[in-house]
Amino acid sequence: KELDIPKSLFAMTVPIHLNKMQKSDMKSFIRSLFCEPGMIDKNMRVDGDVADCIYECTKGCPLYTERVVFWAMRKKIIELDESRNRVVINSTLNGDPIGRLRGLLPAQLNEEILEVLNNLPHQEMDALKVACCLGTMFRIERFEALKYEGFYESLLAVIASHGIFDKIDVEHYKWKHIAVFEAVESIIISNERIEIHGRIADALNPLTVDHVEGDAQFARHYSMAERWKEAYSQYMEAGKKAERNLDFWGALSLYKQAESCLKQMEGQPSLEQMLSPRIAIGLCLRELIRYDDAEIELEYCLNATNNVSEENKASIEFTETYLKVITALATLKQAQSKYLEAIELYDRALPIARENQGLHSQVWLANHVAAYAEILRKSGNVFKAKKLHSEALEYRTAAVEVGACTILELASSYTQLGCTLFGLGDFSKAFNFHKKALVARVEHLDFHHSLVSESLNYCADVLQSMGNGKDGIALGMHAANIRKTAFGTFHPAYAHALSVLGSCYHSIGRSYDALELLEECLDICEVAFSMSHANLIPNLMLYGSILRVTGNLHKSRSVYKRALTIHKKNFGDGNEKQRKGMEDLLLDE
Image (cartoon, rainbow, N blue to C red; front, side, top):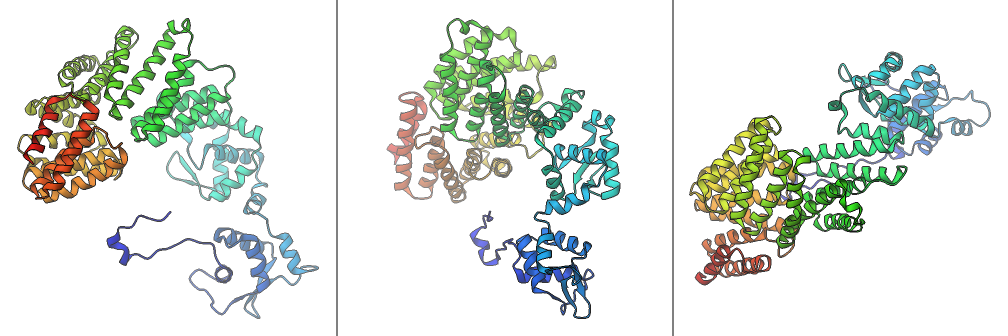
C-alpha cells in the first residue's frame, strides 16, 4: 500500500518498492554467502546451473534463497571451486549433477527446517507445537497448568539447544523466525490442534477473571478447541473491552467472531444469545459512521423481537433483549438526525427501564435516562433534557458515594449537562460543568485520550461564546490535534473540533484563518453525513457568518438558505429560536 504523501513533499520523495530478486541479483546474493561479512569477493562467479536450479526453487525470495544455499552447502551439494573462484555443483555427485541438484533441493522452506526439528525429543517437539498454538508471542505466566505439565522445562531446553525463541523479558517469549513458526504449524494435524488448544484454554481457567476476561486470545483458544459456548462468551467480552478502549474496528471483528460461534453451537441459541452480537455490531457500525449498515443489523433485531410469540414476550429475557434492541436503534436514529423516530423508540424504552430498575444498578438506569435526554437535547427540547440529565447526575453521584460508579462515568453527566446548559444560553454554568469533566478526565486518563479532547473542545466552545475566544484557541488546538490522531482526518469528531477552533478564531477577528478550518470541516461532514443531516446546521451557520465577514455575501446567503432548508426538514416549526435566527440573518443579507 502506497503512503499518502502530501503534494508539497512530492519533489523530495523517492518511491521504494520491495520486490523479489532477479536472477542477476540472486547470483550476487549467493556470492556474498560464500564470503566473510563485509569482505565480498567481486571476482567470484556463480555457475549458471547453480543459479538456475536455486532460482527455480526459491523464485527469488531472499530468506528462502539463504536457507537453501546453506542447506546445499551443509549437504556438500554445492561448493566453492577455489581454483576457478567459482560456486559450482559438487563434481563428485553420481549421475547427472544438475538433475541431482534439482531433485535434492527442498521443495519448500518447511522441509529444510523440519529436517532439523524432527530430530528433537518428543517432549521438546510437543512444547514447540504448544508454543505454536499460543501464537508468535506469548506470556508463560498465564499458563500455570502448562508449566506443571513440563511445557516450560521443554521450552527452555529447545531455547538452549536451538535458539528458536527470543526471551523478551522474564515471562515473554517470541518466535525468532516466522518461517520456523509456520513449519511447526504445518505438521500439527487437526485433532492434535483441537487437543492442544483445549489444554491451553484449561490452563487459563484457574486464573482470576481479571486476567482473562475480555481477552481475544483466550476466546481464540476456545474457538480452536471447538468449545463454542465458551468461545462465544469470551469473544463478546473481548468486544466490550475493545469498545471501552474505543477500538470499534477491533470490537466489530470480535463480535462477528462471536456470531460465527453461535452457528457452531449445539442446540438452538436463546434470543439474547442470537441478537446480542448483532446489537453490538450495529452499535459499532454507528460509531464508525456506517449508518446504513448499522440500520440493517438493528432492524433485523427489531423484527426478530416482533416475531416472538406473545407467551414468550412475558419473560424477563425477552424484556431485557427488547430493551437493548430499541435503545440501540434509538441512538442510531439520533445519530442519523431522525429525532422523531428516536424519541418514539425511547418513549417505549424508558418506562421499561424504570420498571426493571430493581434488576440493575442506579448507573444502569442513569445511562438510559441520559441517553433519552441526549436525544431530546439534539431535537431541541432542551428544558426536558435538562430535567432528565439532572436526574441522571443524581443517580451517578449517589453511586459514586457508595463506590458503584467511577468518576469517569460521573464526568459523562457533567459533560451532558454542560452541553444542555449551553443550549439554554447559561454559559457560565455550562463552563463549570465542562471544567469539572475536564479535571476528572485529565486526572484519570492520558492527556491524549479522546474523552479529554471532548472536554477541551466543549470548554473552548463555551469560552468563545462568553467572548473569550482567545483562551479558547489553545484548548481548541489541543482538542483538534488529539482527535486527528484518535479518529483520523475523515471523522465527524475531528470535524467538530475544527468547527469549534474556527469559531474561536472568528470570534477574535481572525476570520480568514477560520474560513480554511470551516471548509475542511464541511468537506468531512458532506462525506460522513447525509445531505440533510442536522449536524450540518451549526457548521453551515458559522461558515455563512465567516463568509459574510470576509466579504463573500452571495455565497453567505446561499449557505444560510441551505442551513434553513435542512433545519425545516429536520425540525419543521420546532426549535423556533434557532429557525428565527436563521431567517433574520437572511433578511439582513
